[in-house]
Length: 369
View 1 (tube, rainbow, N blue to C red):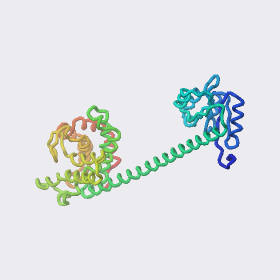
View 2 (view 1 turned 60 degrees about the vertical axis):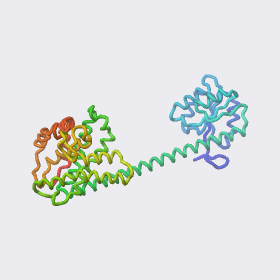
View 3 (view 1 turned 45 degrees about the vertical axis):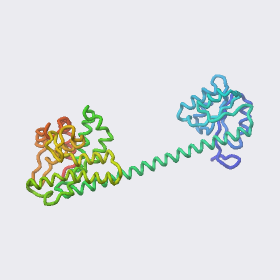
View 4 (view 1 turned 180 degrees about the vertical axis):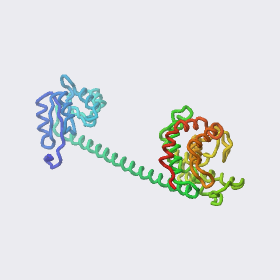
């Protein structure tokens, strides 16, 4: 049953600490009508009562006590998480400014000078309890707000991921590929990035946060195919030179779509930057013979170099209308031949080094006709 004070409000608990019995009696009589009062005649007992349930809402602490003075008591109270937030009012006969300054610097909320004035004690106790309650309420409100922000952020991220998947799926359905191609390539990229994140050439650009963003943005690598005419995109035979030039524009279309998103939101972000890099540059080759710009070596963004390996591997092991599926081993042999000309050597070596993981991803997201 909850106890209440004389005015009907729930009783708050006050711990009074003083080595003089008369002072304890005086303060207990003064406070008992409105508060639940605990008494301690020394510092050691005060620390035990402060930590014991129910914990006090406020501590009135005598400054000058034998064995352990008030300064030491408050030091220990403030170092323990369980008692650090309990407000402390010092009771003292010392009137020097230096003493008061020292107590306040240790975390005291207020000072009451002896001999005590009952009206002053009641007002200051009431004020400090009100401040403490307001601080707790503010903390609770902040916790609620943080929870709401996290919940809303999770909703936004979920919506973003769903939109990405829908956009990527749209591009894939226009091509002769499946949604599983999206899942496979994004997981290849993530696994490859994790394999490279300790490499001296890549450690600064492949943080855990960036790898997560790469994983999310990778499905947009072929978003530009939505701009390629069906007669070219779906042609079962080899493209002629003019058709091939149009096909290559899918990298430009992809970049332009993502740049339009950046203009719409008014800024770029790491996620949009990765998506733009991958869409525009994943067809570049290490030796400069790729497209659309003929970039070479480290001119090619790291994100695009990772996608280049992942995309070619998956294209090789997947049946298309213009070619049969190669076996895993055949695909790996073809990738090896591209080391140093098509692919960044270190990136390819890392991909070869996670062969078992690559096979597991391919199996997990295998196409079923």
